[in-house]
Length: 381
Image (cartoon, rainbow, N blue to C red; front, side, top):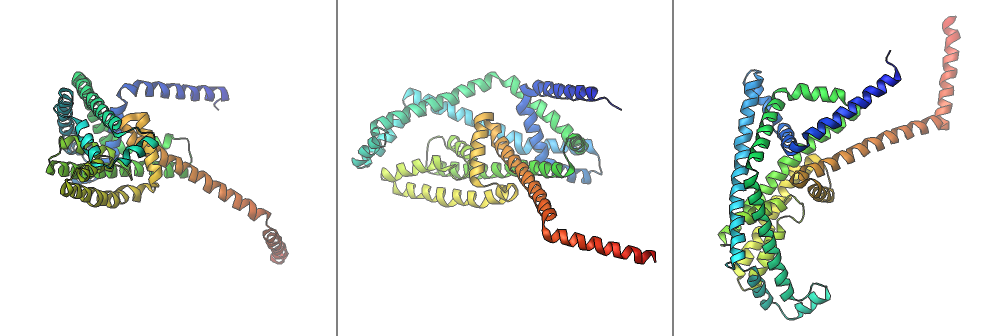
């Protein structure tokens, strides 16, 4: 029989090697993270491919990896390259003065009544001239950050391809050996079968719903907004479309942070037709995509309130960057699931305690015991 001190030593060793292994993986956290996420999302397709290929796991896994490359990685890479190029061009135009954001704000200021200046001052925002300078400065800083990111991406091309290779390599083995590996992980988790089933089921459901739902909603809204900007002749439609797609990860507010100011600018400067068209596209088309697709793809499976999704997404992205739009809602869902399990178990314990202390149950137990005692002599007779 294993001694207590030996068991504690082994548990300490288990924790130490686990922490060390996680520490080793930290430099490639994003590659490992997205490899696991893609494996969870595309695992149903892996099962179909296995059935199609007669159980040949290597061929099915390789086919699934190639599908991920063509569906996810190549489009994202092309969009990112075009975005960086367009953002750098906008930054150059702002720096040289070819694109004057302050001039657009000044046109909107001249179209407003003078009382708005006083309202802004009372609100602590200064007059519209100061607001124009702030908007110009913010646009210059934002485009400069984007340009610096572009330079950083160019300098870290080797690291990017290394991370991409690690992700695809890991993804292949997760597809091939994911089922037995998942079984081993479930067996190793030191929780009861009930807890493991509930929490792991919630983990997989929320991950798939968040990634598939949010990405589809964001891509749809960004594409609609970008096409609307392109049709109206707005500068850098791809850049604004990607920004709208990124902001669409936030429920309720999302893409309106981009298209609403532009629509207001059009209405104030007399371009009524463009303002009405953009408002219609933003409120009806983009809003309908959010109101219809998000509950269908995200809310139906995660069953998280919008305010929880919003706060957890913002918090996750603040802590983990772009990975946070998955990590944040996932942690929130596991938090709610864990506390639901705890509350249900507590209710069951309290209900059992009340049943034991109930006078009616006590009398019924006495009656049952009396009947049992009466039956025993009769049976002996």
